[in-house]
Structure formats: structure tokens, C-alpha cells
Image 1 (cartoon, protein in one colour):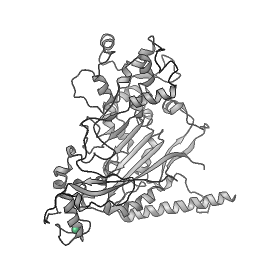
Image 2 (image 1 turned 90 degrees about the vertical axis):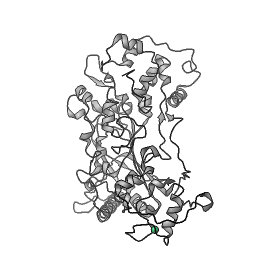
Image 3 (image 1 turned 30 degrees about the vertical axis):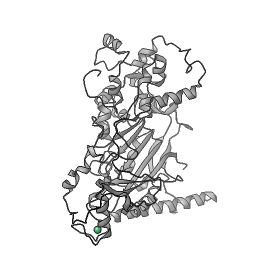
Image 4 (image 1 turned 135 degrees about the horizontal axis):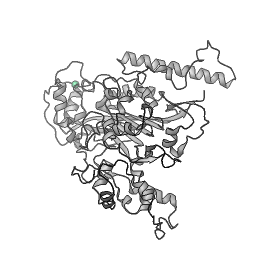
Length: 501
Ligand SMILES: [Zn+2]
């Protein structure tokens, strides 16, 4: 891989690493073929003499090991590049949902009202200059600045440090995927599509031997070289119906190298098995028909929810489930046993019965080591009430997970510390639950790209801006200054729980 002349992308650990002056490269050239996929630098170094670095304060006891770890983690943490994209306006970020009016005296441009047309084609809308990748659409956010520079120089200092820290960059990095939309600010290969990225960029960790394994036993790929944290900036269609990537996990693991190393499909989901933390960000522009400012709709219980009526039906199902759970808790508290004809007798703590078989909310079962799921729900100010209702409902969602069980070969190799705490050897139900945690709130001012094709104040069906409408006038005043609506984000975090039924 090294020296093939590809432009370097700082978001790609393997590639970026290959561009650094590599003290091991002379060894590499002499002792292995370029296509030797079995070479394992760690294994190699472990067979070499290792200087204990007894004169270094990191290793002679002056700096405690916990502090050393923190310093090393910090040294290997990415940071925004000097040329990272900046906002051209003040996004005025707040960590609450208080309204922030834009005062007249902050807006230098004041033009006479114009009869601009709202009725453009969707293509024209998306071809607008303000909605191009280079303008930051739709990836530049208060919490997503690109590019990020990864720092690997610490790995080059000595063998002892390398062996101690080589897996940290992958383990502590949050990998961001834009999921087919093609708006990848890193201009990197494949990050639009997790499947291809993992196959093409991260699928060649050197094979290692399973923990406790003896040389000569079947070799598996190094488990510590898989991503642990992933963020998906994804349109709803990617989650749901059109591509249903999340739900259809078979489309996630077409990995030629992988299949060559691991016989059988049972292990082919391992790229996602080590994932600990998944974050899904549904931006203002990710919701169905945001261009036409249609009402928001989502339901984890379906492959794709048809309309608001169907969403309301699903909300009702969650409420009914909640009442049955409360009834069961009440019975248990007073020592009553639910009878088969009680409504609460068959209630499932993980809500499994509420999900259609191919709903996107069941996809997390494939991620057998998932600890947390975070979803950001974002919309514009005029839809704040709609989203409030959705988020009130979302905190009640539970996502079934694969059952916990006695560590198998796979989970031994991938679970932190080798085992799940409290493992009894029996199977037990697990699910993701947001219960009790407050919803985090954030708000910021988007640029003019975040206006929909409709005025939200005018009666429906208007074709052009109307001077008599305060919404139209305000929108034009902001747009003339490059500004868009204020955007509100609700962040809900679910944590893996063990069912007590
Ligand atoms: Zn209007």
C-alpha cells in the first residue's frame, strides 16, 4: 500500500499511516512481499527484543500507568485540520431550545421585498449552489467539522509504545459515514458507504491468533483492529425502505478478504459485532420530503412508516405496551402472578412484539457488542412541536438485541475484557433502553440551504413569496444575509440492558 501515490486522506488510518516516514519500511521491503496479507507487525515486534525504556518517566514509575494511558490516548486523538471548513455565518449554538431571534441591526443587508418563486423542481432545489458539498451541505455542523487530522506519530517512537497503543486510533475514533448520499466532505473513498469502506479500507488487519490460542490453530483477524464507534449521517431512506441497509445486514458484509479468512456466514457479521457505540444523526434534510416541508414521520417498528396516521397507531401501541408493563410491575410488587388471560401476561420487556419482521429497529440485533445507541433528531424551528411529540415517544422505544449468552469463540474475542459482566452461561434477553436519561438539546442557526421549498406561514400551495406574509418577509430578510431557519436537535441515548423477565 505504501508509496502508491494516492492523495492522502487524513480520515483513513491505514492510508495516513502509510504516508508517514516509517522506520519499519526497510524491514517490510526486505522481508515480505507487498501483497503478503498475513504479515502482522505486532506479532513480528513481539518476537524482537523490546527496550523497557527504563529511563523514560512514562515507564520508570514517575508517571502512573493510568496517567500514561490518558496522555497516550490524547496524543492519538484526531483534531480538526488547519484548513477545516468553517461556518461563514455565526451559528449561535445553544445547548437548549430557547428561541434566538435575529435582530435587525445584526443584518447588514436590507433589500426591498421581491416576489421570489418557491415552486422550483426538486432537482433545481438540490442543484442550488448553497446545497453543494463544497458549501458544507449537508455535513458541516457544530459537531462535525472536516477534515480531521489523525495523529499517529506516537506509534513511531519505540516498540514498547507501539505494542501498547497500536489499536487505540481505531478503537477511540468515531468513524463517520454519509451513507450513499455522496456528500463526503473528506472526498475520501468509500465513506459514503460503510460496507465498502470497511471492505476496502479496514478489511486487511493482519491475522492474529485467538486469545489463548496456540500457534498452528486457525488464525482469525485481529479483533482489536475493528471500529468501535460509528456515526451515521444518514437520510431516512437509507435506514428504511428504499435501501434498508441498516435492516438488511446481509448487505453489510460482502467482504472478500473476510470470507477468505473465516469459513461460513456465521462469522461474516463480525465487522459490526465489535461495534460498541452507534450514533445515527437524522439531520433537518434527512427526513422524508423535507423539501416540501411535509410532516415528519418515523417508526422503528416498521420498515418504513406510511404516514402520520400509521405513526399515531404505532405511538398508541407503545402506550398500550407501557400500560401493560406498569400493570405487570404492579402485580409483581404485590406478589401477584399474572394469569394467562391478563393483558399484561405476555408483555415483552424488549418490545419485540411491536416490530414488524423487517423493521429497521431490529437491525441492532446484529451488533452483538453494542453498548449504546444514540439518535440525533433534528428539524427546523417550524417543526419543533412535531418533533417534540416524536421524541417524547422515542424515549419509550426499546430495541431488541441479540441475547446475551456464555461467551462463544466470537464474543470472547470481541467483548471487552473477554466476557460480559454477570454472565451466567445461560441465554438472557437484552435490549436498548433510554429510560430515565434526560434528552440532550442543542440548537443552531443553519444557513439558507436549510429552507424548504415552502413558506411555513403562508397557506398551502403558494407559488411565490407574499409581501403580506410575515413568514415570507422574515425568510427573505434572513436569506439575503445567507441565513436559514434555526435548527433544533434532540439527542436520545439508549443503553444496553438485561431483561429481568
Ligand atoms: Zn409566507
